[in-house]
Length: 402
View 1 (cartoon, rainbow, N blue to C red):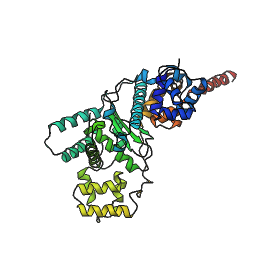
View 2 (cartoon, rainbow, N blue to C red; view 1 turned 45 degrees about the vertical axis):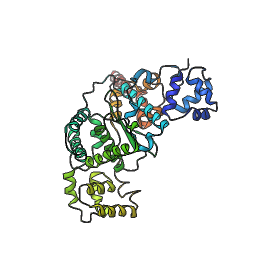
View 3 (cartoon, rainbow, N blue to C red; view 1 turned 135 degrees about the horizontal axis):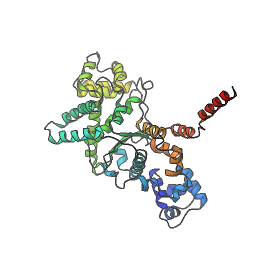
View 4 (cartoon, helix red, strand yellow; view 1 turned 120 degrees about the vertical axis):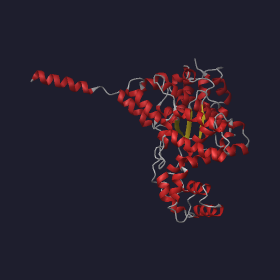
């Protein structure tokens, strides 16, 4: 029997309205409504179209889907997702991203079922931050600076580089994914009700420095804004949260003492080109370097305006020098887990696709942001006919004949 809820979940995750899906299927919107609410079952031709649109197996629509089997209802608190301002008021978009998070949470539950994962340091760090924020008398700017300094220390970052920032945030407990989330949003983050921290990064970033800032910005939300109901904030309140995350990102990526030492080597502080060596060292944009220098008092307001005007005049607000040369960090944690469970025989990737998830590789690629070739490699490994045994047999035969 066709399960309409499975279709609803897929449609929402992909961001389609019933009208949009009906147009793709060349049927009425009413028909889609009937499928989703189990009043009628689609014919085989429609099912084949649906499986092509959503990259699932036909049987996906006739069995309990992964959200029923691997997701804990209510674990994704939509109001706590730290969206940027342009996205948070677009209901269809927020619904789609929340549903995507449900599928991601299900996927992590699935691949970690048989793994023992220790208490994550990022949870301990968040609790330490909450205790500090609730007990300190420091003004807010100083609080954020102190939290950024604490975060670098607890996550294990050296104070002279950001080369391992993605790796260490993942290692210490965050689950980071890439996704096509449009031009209107850079990234978003969330703590689930079961204390799992997510960061979702847009995959359209054009530079390593923008990627690093997005990552640090979302870490700021995770540490500073735990349980904040973003959907209930007005424009001014939301802007304040974004400003705080930006301030955190600057302080986190450019630790005060070490960065001030670097600034001593800059002769012309209003010239963006003078900061190129620091951009290469810290993997941070010229714009952020200038903002941080101004925040630390190296440039007064007038000099900072001149610095920014120079950025604009040189065209650096669109594209900066070195953007094409600095490698972009990509999430590796989920790939490492999949590699472990596949090689240990804990989960068979072919069975995962065919039986457990009932989806195509394209589905997992869209869900996780991981290249399709990564999953395909394990299917090729599954088809290895263990020819090493043939070699062993050949050796035995040769010895007998000898």
